[in-house]
Length: 121
Image (cartoon, rainbow, N blue to C red; front, side, top):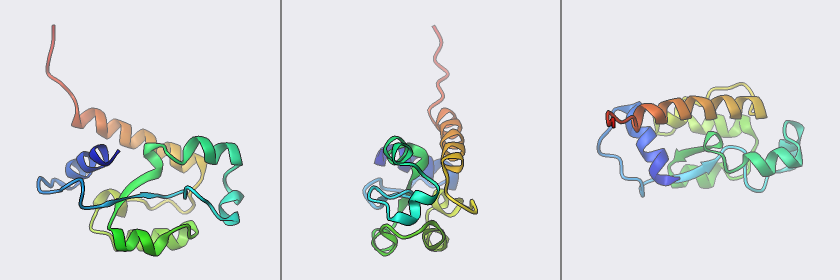
């Protein structure tokens, strides 16, 4: 996952110098969500969505420790301080199954662009 996020960040930011071991992987919907997260996600949705690419983003380790399992509005404010453009573009008003799925689709489209092949048989 670190490799994929690194390549997506390189593509969106036009960076070639990004090391995939220089960032931590932030779970927007936390692995251990507080009760506040249950307002928008059922237990089943948490279980099936927490490790999806659309729920993950690169973040500086010190910022990742700062946000922990906080609510989405707190996390979103911190994301704007990140150097990673992939993280800065998380601007949804609320983090819901719908916004997570929409981000998943956008990242999948970007991945197709990053890993397209001109190879033909």
